[in-house]
Length: 381
Image 1 (tube, rainbow, N blue to C red):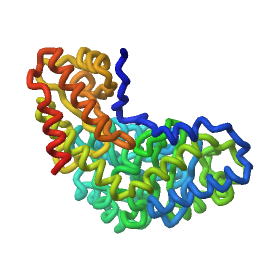
Image 2 (cartoon, rainbow, N blue to C red; image 1 turned 90 degrees about the horizontal axis):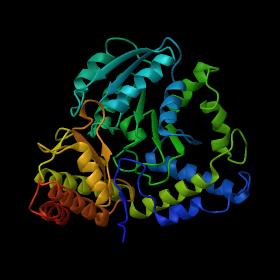
Image 3 (cartoon, one colour; image 1 turned 135 degrees about the vertical axis):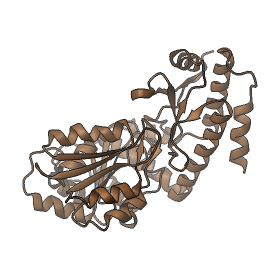
Image 4 (cartoon, one colour; image 1 turned 60 degrees about the vertical axis):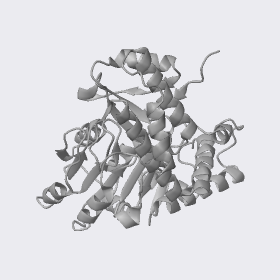
């Protein structure tokens, strides 16, 4: 009998059966009053979830498109923009912004470390920046940026729009737009929300919406806030066809989050991450992200001496678990283990046990049950 495959990559993440059922519903017209009601309810729920004083845009697309949407609506060619990068996905903003004709400055950390908030403050004081981007959790490094502390610094620079990339953080790491001074927050449906890929979600506060008005006509069409604002206010209107079934799915995912409680969900992610990372360290893995800046949504695990990446991940797949390889300079040196969204204790224990069996098969570990024991001890404390 074949093992059920556990998908433990940092997205897409497991989708709950009720959410899958929403995607399997018979598609209706986007103008159907019942769908319009569902869409409007989802928009209101998402606004409350992230405490925005503005709008949220739910648009067919990806997290990468959400990145572009965020930048396009608050900057114009020739503007200065500061990019705070903690890895591969922070660096992705560089090409995106240069193509738009922005003057790009980058504050990049050594992989596994975070850019000091004081350094961000110093850089912002040097010139007038139209915007700053910060990746809340960089999936390549597992580093979690101190978005609240950065937000406090940015309050001193009222002309600067604070953009937070929450693709691998939203609905798991704390995010409060008004409370943290975030002007634009973006994410995708396939990470901690636990929906299949296909929806870009972008929250825009009042300051960001005012900036969009000041820009007048922008070169972008599909991702223009002003094209979508009438739709978000009244989903019965038409600009581009909404992803009907995915919107139903996201509505169900938000229901699941609200039933658990957003703070309780964040606490669960924090506890599972701490327990998982302790278990992995007990098995000889090293965590790339430094203490104090480790994400709760995934762990980036550097192999013990003598473990071959491809052999490890192929054997682990045979044991029933899919994980992701390392990126950049860490390709072949580590793997990335997702533990976000709907992944529960059963999944975590099964994944850790499979990792132990894999190490045993490769002759790198003999004390079966050690990692699972550490995980359970942490979870029970």
